[in-house]
Length: 221
Image (cartoon, rainbow, N blue to C red; front, side):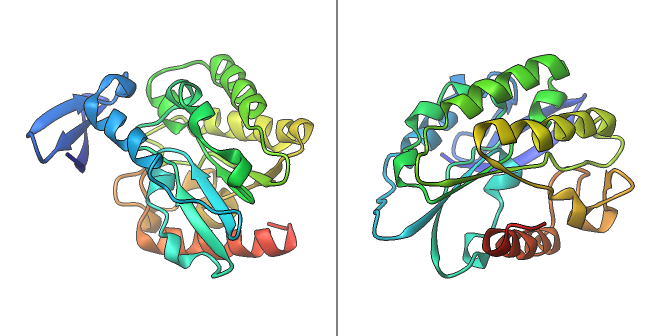
């Protein structure tokens, strides 16, 4: 079973799974078999301390990152799941073997807004997630929530989340990387970089990873 299509209808996101031709609403994704299968697949990663390892953690936006575009010095493991939000991530964060990570790339939050969660509840979940990342030797990079087209999410709320992240991650010894500096314009996702107002075209990923590689090498956006 695998994810073949995501579409929006009536303000909700649905998944179409090709193998059994069923549709699933985005809400409560952790209860579905396809989510559990994806979660189990992470246990099959063969991770070694001999490599410099990047762990990617997020939702479908992070899941789409082309790992071959990262610097060759890194081995990249993507722990993202389509439809993930702060609540479902909290329920699985302890299954991620942070002791093997050299760099953790973290982005979550846009699906919480899609489900109508308050800013206060999302910020509370951020704090719980950051406290759960037990990573002594690695660099944790918290990335901004990416702006959307104005008809998809409230970008003012995204701005509010990012303001907290930029300042708040310092208390945990983490770094903040602002993806919107390269993908956004006037607090919106640039039209030419998206095909549905949220998810990214390949051009957007190439721009994002180019600046991210520079950030990992220099520490500057």
